Length: 129
Image 1 (cartoon, one colour):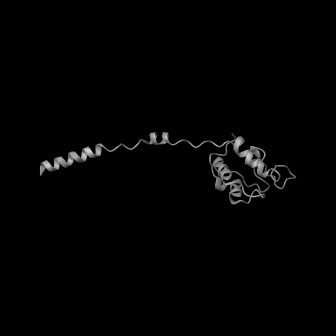
Image 2 (image 1 turned 120 degrees about the vertical axis):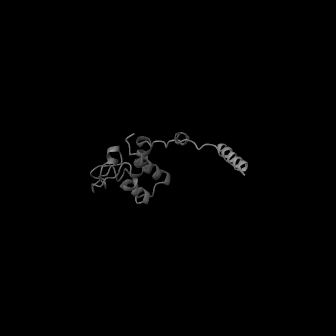
Image 3 (image 1 turned 45 degrees about the vertical axis):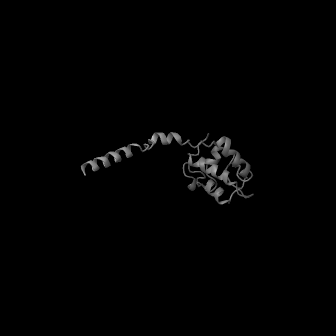
């Protein structure tokens, strides 16, 4: 009986030793490519400029004082003084809410991939890059 127990223990240890080790956290992170940073100047500003400049030029005679022609305008507040972009929090950002629900632009909703790009930019901190 003792020999059988020793044999079982030896097989158990040998079986456990043959299992591949789980990758270390650093190895797993190294395999996951980082999400590319969204560029305000190259990606976000062109989307906003194409879809909202007639009403949101930031000029006093525009329908809204909210400007979409510059980083400062996008980050500022409109006539209601509510922040249009809350860096790091797309769901609290009026800009994202309006695009996501399709309320803006009035000509028709943006393509989902463009709305997602705006969401990512805001989630990444809404950088002026």
